[in-house]
Length: 208
Ligand code: CDP
Image 1: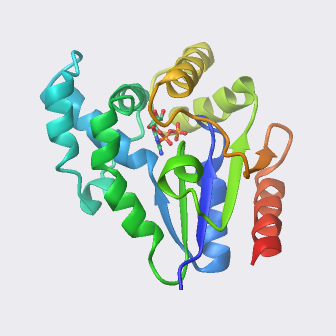
Image 2 (image 1 turned 90 degrees about the vertical axis):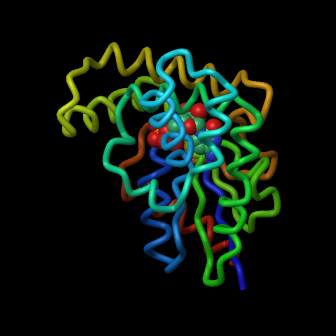
């Protein structure tokens, strides 16, 4: 029987960390749906270039496969920005729906994290969490992550990127970033990873 946990929230809020820990705790499969948009964004940058011509981006979005999610070049700041641009194209989003819904239905339970899981992809999810934090805290965390990956950047650049992406993700017409009405809010600004994970696990236990 399926059990679906939808985890949404803005860039670098800690969705990935919380989702992985929740999946490990309950033995659920985990899909980071941001990777799907990053795959399309990366391919668009490489094959189309900065114009990101929508017709060609839409064609690329039909070719995404599970194997692409393992690429090691999806976590750069440039790919994140491209991802949020291609994610505003309605046909791109439509082309990625089936993959996500199929994943959600797998027996044994699934955690999906993204921007529109609780609102569009799995509106009937068993548990919905909206994980957020202040833009400054999110930028600090993302800056450390990118630095560790060897990317040459600054805190100010990362903060500007996070704010630009939040704005684009929240203001787009299709599937904008917004908490579902029945989502549980988890603000991780002043929480350690362990505290955030413990709260998420408690919220899921309460619904099981
Ligand atoms: O890891 P981070 O939170 O920085 O980003 P991500 O989850 O990898 O998502 C990258 C971009 O993909 C976001 O800025 C969104 O524009 C888009 N996205 C989306 O539109 N819908 C989703 N379900 C997941 C990601």
